[in-house]
Structure formats: C-alpha cells, structure tokens
Length: 193
Image 1: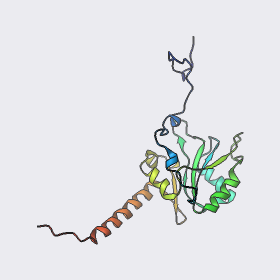
Image 2 (image 1 turned 45 degrees about the horizontal axis):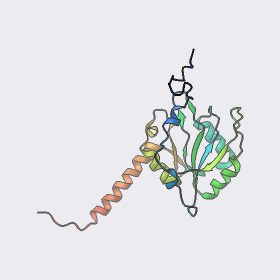
Image 3 (image 1 turned 135 degrees about the horizontal axis):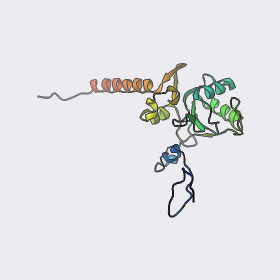
Image 4 (image 1 turned 90 degrees about the horizontal axis):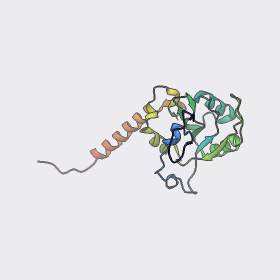
C-alpha cells in the first residue's frame, strides 16, 4: 500500500491531515480572550482573513491604500510561509482611529481581491491584541522582526514614515531607558559609605 509523503504512517490513524507549519506553532496554551479588550475600550486592530496566498506585503498594502486607507494605519503584519514564499492568508492591521477601523471593516468584509484571481472572499474581525503598543510589544521579541527579507517583517508607521520594526523596538527601548534613568536620577538615594 502506497502512502502519501505528507501522511506519516501511524498505528492509530493511518491518514493524518497535512497541517502547515504555522498552524502547528500557534500558541495554544495562551487564553487570548483574557488579552481581549473590554467592550468599552476603543478597538483599532483588525484581522483580515482569506487573503489570496500569492499576495505580497507590498501588493496587499497597495490595494488597502487604493481603497482609501493610506495614512490611516500605524501597524501592519502579513505573516508569510517562508518555505513556500507565500502569505498564510491573514493580516493584522492597526488603525490610528476607531472610525477608520470601522470603515475598513465595512469596505473589506465580503471584499474580492483584485490583483490575483481567486474565489476567496475577505472576512474581517477585531483582533485579540488591540492597539499599536500591544502589537509592537507582542512582535518585538519574535524572530520575524529580524527576518532577512524585509517583506516578511511587520511594518510600523510613525509620523507618516514607514519604519522597520527592529528600528522601532530599538527606539522604544532607548526611550524606556531614558525615562527610567530620569526617574532614577530624581530618586533620593541614601549615601553609601
């Protein structure tokens, strides 16, 4: 009996479904509902799903900006399958204002992507992680932040300028250190002998 190369032979289940590497590495132990904002918090981050896999970061951003969202987001991340050099079908976008996020949901829910022929229809939902700082903090210590290919890294926009995630993290750490140092200098420390 021939078996498919992606279906390892197991005594209890001879047909094991193929699971892409990114599906196996999603943190299952973390209860993301605990990280979700309360309904009273302003929400600004969405998860755009059902993106055709051939879209690159630049192509998707171009389509989003052409739809009227240029300058309205400050964080964007399109996870990529580095083995196949395709996206994994979803992206995270944080908007600078809740109204922009709501307009994005209205525009892209049920949207048919233009650049690549596909039967996929976009879906949009609010993300578990909300806000610019939560997203930057979450991705700051991830390997993707330092990926060799810049198209695989998250994008951060500050004062209208696209910045590399690693540069933003370095800047934030420097600001955090400067803030800590200022508070340290202001402390009344007992003299040591």
